[in-house]
Length: 400
Ligand SMILES: Cc1cc2nc3c(=O)[nH]c(=O)nc-3n(C[C@H](O)[C@H](O)[C@H](O)COP(=O)(O)OP(=O)(O)OC[C@H]3O[C@@H](n4cnc5c(N)ncnc54)[C@H](O)[C@@H]3O)c2cc1C
Image (cartoon, rainbow, N blue to C red; front, side):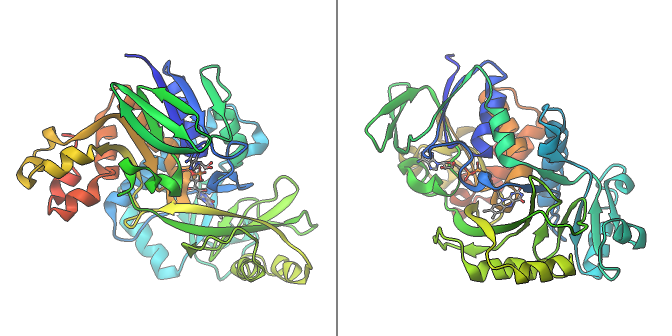
């Protein structure tokens, strides 16, 4: 097998997949439509990393936990500059009853729960300069990363070639080769292709059925102030990051299928309002500022909040198959050597490194039982199978 792969999209998803494959001997070409890597959702000055659990969704919580544990351990050992990440805690402000229920629901599912999370108490609130009435959870290994620094670090590898200003417009198969065409009529070919282009996933014929919604998000920041700020990420209605790169960063807004690229004053105001309970003086200071910097980007979200990670069907074969045949998961009409990883929503920096590690194991034909469980969960074809009443098949594409 020729170990050559083209990856479309150089955000955290494309960059981490490139990293895992390059480190297992693949010759990787990363194709990015913008003039630099990490210009989409992955181009913010900070990304919070903490496990956002649901009250009653065990499968989602298992996936969240696996991703969080993997990603934090992995980032810790990458050798990133110490100013570009920190995992010394993240606080999620929650309603009291919700925080208690979540803690109870999680008990027994997390090894050493007491060192993993704590309900907010007086000493914690005092330590992080928080309002004494706040309630919620402290995730002791949560933290943040500088997304651009992380992406750059990942692709700094002799097996990875980065080509920017290359917008892919089509993917076709000729014999055993995938042919990718760019807007500027350039062609690239390889036996293997991975599509990591976030909310643009549906742009290709082969993946047009993989629906994501684009959620516009705006973050804001002000230059350093003399305020004493919390030393860890605090998430309430919005989040306030610790002081970094001479900025106090806060956000973020959330608006579905809103494609306005400009900063909006109304969104800046929303972001300021969202940190009112986290730091009252800083909130007042932001209200007084004449101009506040910021950035706009989009998150790609699926309807069920689960990303699409894995393979897709050959549309022609799929249309010809009967429901009975599709129920036999050994005979599903997968396309060979075409992979997707998209739809990471607001949690790309927790999910994408773990999911691309698993995807790289799939590409290397080296799946563990846990990898198979993850790919069953993230099966990109789950909607088409479920529509044919094949719910079980949708989550059992691999036998475990
Ligand atoms: C305001 C905001 C705040 C956020 N905060 C957090 C946070 O605190 N923590 C967290 O974990 N996540 C956060 N997220 C979500 C996170 O940023 C995303 O989940 C993550 O960046 C997704 O990474 P990605 O690589 O899949 O997509 P992207 O980073 O968007 O990368 C996709 C790349 O594909 C390229 N591309 C698209 N189409 C083509 C094409 N046809 N040809 C070539 N290239 C193409 C794009 O230019 C882009 O560079 C936030 C998102 C937003 C918008």
